[in-house]
Length: 97
Image (cartoon, rainbow, N blue to C red; front, side, top):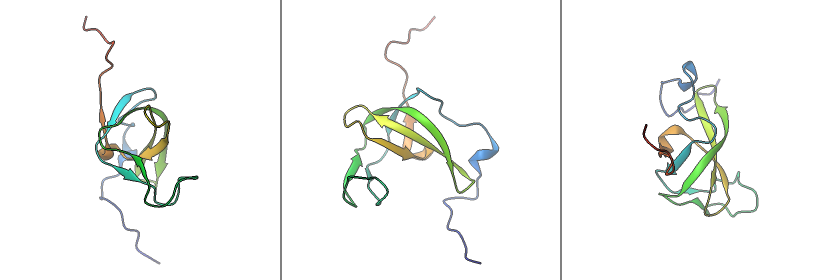
């Protein structure tokens, strides 16, 4: 049996997702195509650090991590990202009560 290389021993799926559908998020790092994004060359930038998008899908990976499908406003790209690659943003039109 082969060993699976995991990012950590922590299993996110033991709890609820950190982000929810519709949450506004910012990319914490630049993401390049690893060959799984159709229509783009391997290594081509899909998301630049600081780009803003919205969570449109929540899935899982390796029975350990949540993967958030984020649609980015500036490019229209929908990219799967881990929690550590994203930061939550408050909605600009949200008012404090």
